[in-house]
Length: 357
Image (cartoon, rainbow, N blue to C red):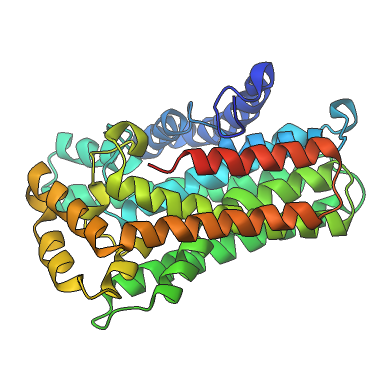
């Protein structure tokens, strides 16, 4: 069992789920009196936030434990953990709109549900898309606000609330910067440099998924700012490795690993770090030709995979993953952390490494 496993928290998973469900139920309850589509949106949000790996709240709770936090003395633990799950859910809903996705894990997402809702009420394709996007956007906004509200009202120790709100603020800001840069890079006529792709890759995920939850657990455990700083540096490097592995999975992983059809990133022509590395090779003309056909089916996807492999881009990306993991482990070696925290962070790095397809 690793810190990336849904079962890592054991019986305390129920506490995390309960805090998430309570927050979403509050939103849904307030939406119900409006009736109509808005009431239906509340139910769709509840469905969208059920289950999942709960990875980010797990990091909050696990770090709190590893740094000697006492649950009985920290009533804010689960509300703060839940806030990072709601932040994640909000980002997913906004991402689905930007990516024009109507499914998540094989079932309709909020936008997909409301496209169907619009069709059932007689809307044409354009109207259905408009309502679907509006529903996903507003649901994400509501969850984003609730994420901040959970921290603002949590019974935190003296001085902790401001630190936690600052963490959330930074996570939102950096992630927004990364998302916009990612889209801008995909639209450029000239090829963005690999460094720009890597920066966007880091900013989209590393802070809100790793650095901020780790730091939040430390704040709740009463850790000093030096420890929080070490966790920020570690989380930044590990988060980059995690997202680069996701790029490998999106191109070469199984459908089970990716949660979508094999080679989905190649079919969708996503401008990932893998593609940026391939563009810098002499084999790029062959890769570009293969990628242009990847959307046509499984055989074309395999040709694109072979071209990327032959170009050396896959090996180069794997080296970047290993470098990022090495950087994270170097931070861990130099940090003054208790043994349980070292064990947790070491296990996290090992778990990210084990995901490489």
